[in-house]
Amino acid sequence: MDSIKLLTMVLMIILGIMLILLVVLGIVFVTSKMGQKEEKEEIKDASNGKAPKVKKYKEYKTASVLDFMEFDTIVDNMISQKNGNRYVMVVECQGINYDLMSEVEKNSVEEGFIQFLNTLRHPVQIYTQTRTINLDSSIETYKEKIKEIEMVVEKLEAQYKKMQREEEMYTKEQIDRAYFELTKQKNLYEYGKDIIYTTERMSSNKNVLNKKYYVVIPYFVEELGENSFDKEEQRNLAFSELYTRAQSVVRTLSVCGINGKVMNSNELVELLYVAYNRDESEVYGLEKALKAGYDELYSTAPDVIDKQIRLLNKQIEDEAFELAKNKVTEARTEKQKALQEKRLKKRDLIAELAGIIVDENAPIVGEDVAEVAKEKIRKETEEGGSEEDGKKQKAKRTRKTKTA
Image (cartoon, rainbow, N blue to C red; front, side, top):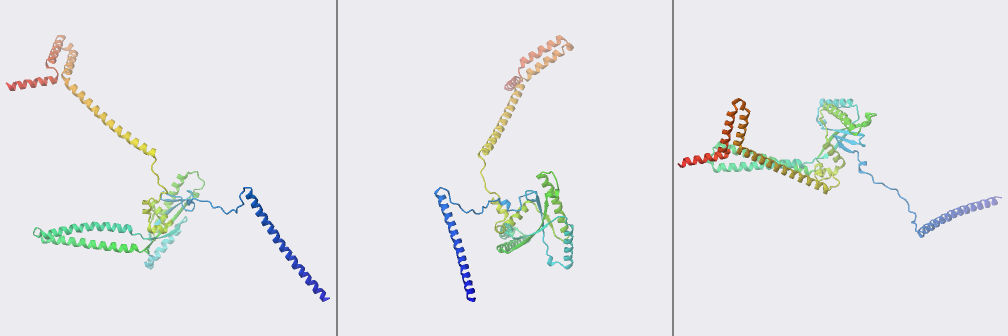
């Protein structure tokens, strides 16, 4: 009986193994068939001129670089963010050496800072930026000053040598004064050279760092509530509110002995430039970058038509000026001619006007007297001729008298 049970169990185990093998073989067969079917479909598509199916990968779209930046633009001493929905004003603070203070001074600073925190009615951020000290501008300034001192030293030295050669023309006091001035300028020159040498050594050491501290004050347009203001009005309101907050921060920080100031647009540009170009800013500062034109993505020549319009406007202006000058000259010439003609006809005009006056007064003086007076005026005019003729005749009579 036990042997039958044992045989039955062995047979069941063998049957189970065989079933498992059959299932595995069936799965392998079905998988191979499906693979062959896919290959045939691809071959069929290729034979029909259709491209085989290609596995699709994730597509990446090119986004604007402004999407990765935290600001849109800088306007009115503010950083505009989120398409004009958030504005930021920054207060630059001058650090104090807290560790070197006495206990009383430290307590005063701490109490002042607590007062600053208690007066805040809006969110702020404290930002610290570490910069490498760039001494190039200082070195250039020193070198220019040293050149000026060197020229003064050369001038004083030449003057002192001249005074030594012509010693009899100067007193001992004058020579001593010149020597004293020369020595003083030489010492100043040597001291300046030593400063330049020390500064250049400091400049070559890239580990000379400086920390700058900033208080960032934000303002959200949402704080205006429901409004119908346009972008410019929103910006003006944001500036007024931010400037008030910034001045409040400056005043409360002054209690701690910390001097602060509101940064202007150029200083904000430099702040962001250093923040986004930390490595490059140590070698290539903002001033050099602007001079090199790094703020322009591309440059274009002026439009040809615009250039022609400017030249034409210049030509019109020049010709109009020349025409006006010529006509003014002509007008002056014609006026001078009229004056000359009037001078020549002066006697005739006087006689004509005298005749008119006599006619007007004929009832008073009498008709006979008036006729006689008019006849005398006519004869005098005919005999004397024009004023120019009278002058010529007078000159002739004078010459004849001298000859006689």
